[in-house]
Image 1 (spheres, rainbow, N blue to C red):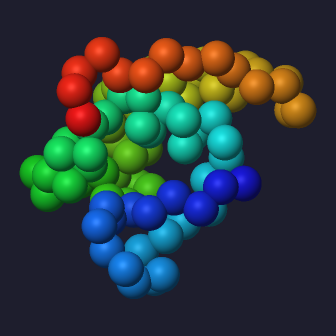
Image 2: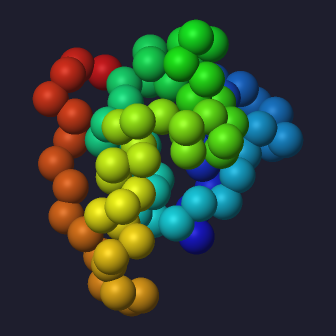
Length: 80
């Protein structure tokens, strides 16, 4: 499990959640930091991430990965 800062550039530890390694890589591979900070996208909560269509598609793939195996993911092509 990895600690993920739900609201970027916040020093509060209250805004962190533990998520799996693959989800952490996926969040940062799919979304730029600007998108993660955008209040309209609601990506600053676990429920908001789960409701996001792009992340839902990725979760379907992540759930198929056997425990202990890691997926390979390229960085987002957009500039961060």
